[in-house]
Image (tube, rainbow over all chains, first blue to last red; front, side, top):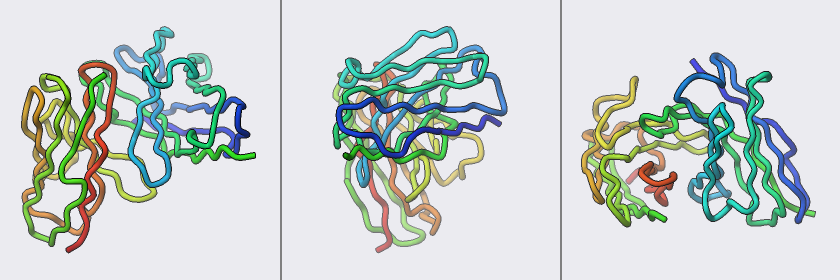
Length: 120
Length: 106
């Protein structure tokens, strides 16, 4: 049973870079056919996929965020990370990490989520 | 980009009611559709994948149908623990979620 846990600062200043890490336990991040992704949810609003990564390093980003997003993987630590640059108040959200099998691209394992507030 | 819409945006129902939620894609997505349930303060939970396949451990009162652009999630007999917000998600081209449907108590 995979377990995912987000970590990182809960407060980021406008124009700075948001950085989060997802630690994976209960299985290897290098497992074949599994992808690792980030999803966010502004307070009281819906879900938005940010991007995904395969253990090999192949990345897929939401076109609306692509210019500001970098997702990376560290197989030695069984972790993957999100960087979102030039943040504004509109980036305030609960950020979830999650995983899915390439055969379906449905997020079947989720972290608990972490609230990141963008404010000076 | 593929856009997803859901209707209704909210529905009030009673325990035992049959509830149907519709999800529509802006272009054909075959059966690349999933449904999630989210309760306040919790991460979403996968209910249905590939449009009609029930995720392991999910009660059989949940069912999904559809292909192409039109999909439905049906709860055959609403239970107290089913009051939540439901999201559809397409996986045909990148990943996009619908805006959600809130099911609350009538």
